[in-house]
Every structure is written in C-alpha cells, then in structure tokens.
Image (cartoon, rainbow, N blue to C red):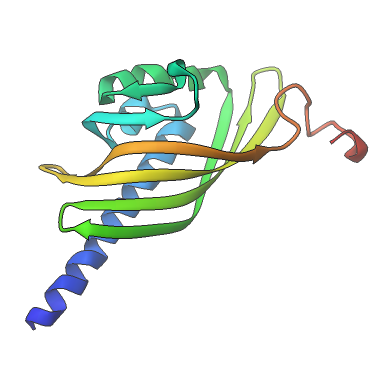
Length: 155
C-alpha cells in the first residue's frame, strides 16, 4: 500500500497544477484579474516579453499589469501538451503550449502561439505559479488586419 501513495499523490498534484494552468487562461478570457492573479504565489514573477513593462513581480502587481488585456473585447486561450516534472514534493516545473486569440473592439483580431515555462511551488493554499515565462512562437496576420474579412491572399 505504501508503494501506491507516491503515484497517487503525484497524480493529484498533476491534476491541481493543470487546474491552475486553466485557471490562468479562464481569468484571461473572463478578464477576471483576481482569478488570474490567484494562480500565482504572492511574490510570483510573470515574464511575457523582453521589455520591463512586460515583466511583473507579485500577485497584486500581476493583477494590475494584466488589466492591459481589457483592451480586447474578447479573447480565447487554449492550452495543450502540458508537461509537468516534479523536482521534489513541493516544487515542479511545467511546459505547456498556448494558442491565444484576441479581438479588439473594432473587430480586428489576431492569434498568438507560444509556450509557457512555469515553476510551481506548493503553498499553504496549494500549488501556485512562482515564475511564468511566455516564449512566443509566432502569430498570424496580427491585429491590424481583420482576418474575418480578409481574402486568403491577404493573410
């Protein structure tokens, strides 16, 4: 019976970490900054680009910084290929892939593809993201072209 405890604990931990990843995406889609910030540790670090304005430390600062998402009228974030590695009972790293679609109020839209590289820690309230780095893989036509109305050769 003791042999089953570790695999069962890791399975439950994987489920909880996966739920946190989806919580982040749901917070982005709903523009619920409290839900989004709740995925991080209190001193969590979010790095979504090379510019200092795209790097934020602390859950409350992340909540405020991600309000920039309110410039979009709609968004949809889709995760895939979630790969979790445990370093010990309280630390894990994760790589996942993201496909994010955003629409501006004027109807223009764009799709971004990338990878999240996360470091997780177990806190008193469960697993949380300690550091998150977004590595962009590319995007489609971008926000200057309304892809719904564009002819195929314009893309």
